[in-house]
Length: 319
Image 1 (cartoon, rainbow, N blue to C red):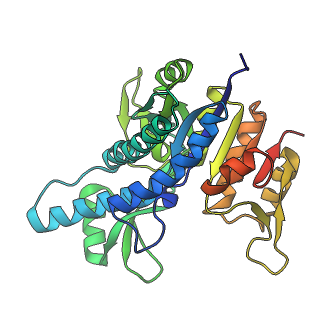
Image 2: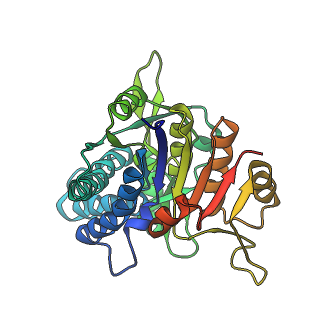
């Protein structure tokens, strides 16, 4: 009997949407189908897998529908943390069903389950004093100021395109459903969890959890989960086959492998990894390796199988 190998695979929410012409639920389902095919390769190669995923575009759609229904029909609006829960269910369903179908096709008897996951954040996290994450649709200044006054929203003018609500992006501290996730993994179940970074909750006192309007970085949440379950691998599946130094510049250079100290140095230099895309992925991996993780990998979905064989992708390892 070979030794058990556990991987946390973090999938980008954008990877379920190929382009502006493929945004429907059916389009996202087909994109999820492609991604789960490559995760099935991992499972066939002997990995036990927990899957985290992004949900940025999907939560945006849910919020937009809610805003339109409110404006046109006077329906109640959906709170942001509930939009997060909705997206966990819908994306979980697409990943779960596609992966179940693919595993069945390959004759692999392995159940798949989605856990609607809350993630605890610190109510005193400095991010709450400086909300920066734009969500929802654009408004004119009058509506924005009215919302700010009546609903306590933080609003900003967004690059000349109109006004938007902004929320905090606090750091994840604890996976509330951790024991359930552990039990499922130990029982051989593939678990879809910490979707969209988890539903942000604060402890209002004495373990009384309350949802908050915030957005948790899904790579940070996947990194936390990987540390807590002592995963052997953190795999971040993104839009590029490998990580590059000086990305998008004339002296761009692809990286096959880097050590933890190299990753920290490159991140600190501040010129290699874009703030909204690659930088948080590298930071998530640094925290994972500093917390005792053995290895991490960044690649795109279609190259997961090749990357695990060492043929491509960027491996990040302890010193």
